[in-house]
Image (cartoon, rainbow, N blue to C red; front, side, top):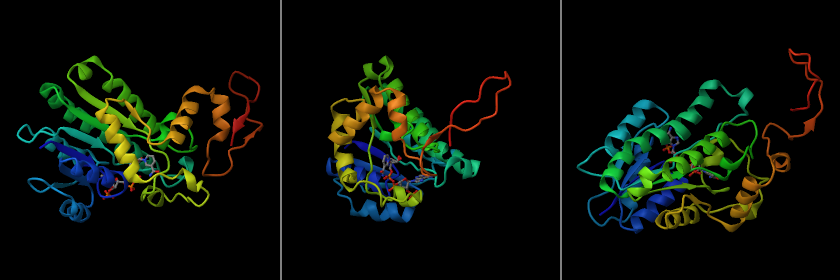
Length: 279
Ligand SMILES: NC(=O)c1ccc[n+]([C@@H]2O[C@H](COP(=O)([O-])OP(=O)(O)OC[C@H]3O[C@@H](n4cnc5c(N)ncnc54)[C@H](OP(=O)(O)O)[C@@H]3O)[C@@H](O)[C@H]2O)c1
């Protein structure tokens, strides 16, 4: 029976992925900070052999990552599929947010993905099989959301997956890496980040089950990028291919309207003319 380790399995997309993988016959290692919630999930999931494992860890810390890394490196119980799903967004615009809160976003969204993938890949390459599913976001393709470290953190996840996943070293070993780019998905994500969603277009919401099913299908087909909906595939195409000056005015600024104003910025030290700045 193959084993999958899913981070952020207690809620949202991770929970949906855990359900979809259990339905496919995987033995699961469920990771998040909330052991009680994971335990309830573990007992509710179908299992065709030994019961699913719960691993409580705060992946925004190096110690929490090490706990999971040890499980990924356990040669006696190899992990066939690593799902790096846990992720957060900052709850305030960048200038108002304590720097520690901004760092925590990078610690979870970037460092944990790097560390866990680094722990899992050598075993997969040696066994010449395995997969890594990294949950990024449509936001990975541009600063669709201004004043936030979230889009850049997801750009890293996408670039990392394309860089390592398409390398000869990994592909020749038959190991698959896929980055998932969900759009708005009905999970706890926005409430946790204090993001008001009333004005989001209702028809753009995706269910976590749909994101999970499409992601696993694309991983099985060996696709490097999975975008779980035709509308978002179109948006992603535009974000990738339209010139930046066309894309940037559509970016969402949670701290106010993103209007480009001409303000008298101070001349720089070379005595150059003031420039237009966004405020
Ligand atoms: N929802 C969307 O619209 C959307 C869109 C694009 C991309 N995404 C991405 O999808 C992924 C899943 O998010 P979601 O929407 O399913 O959000 P969610 O419902 O808030 O779930 C987030 C999961 O991450 C876990 N988590 C949070 N902080 C953690 C930490 N420090 N250590 C370990 N686990 C932690 C949470 O569990 P505990 O609280 O129990 O630790 C929870 O299981 C994220 O990477 C997110 O960026 C979401």
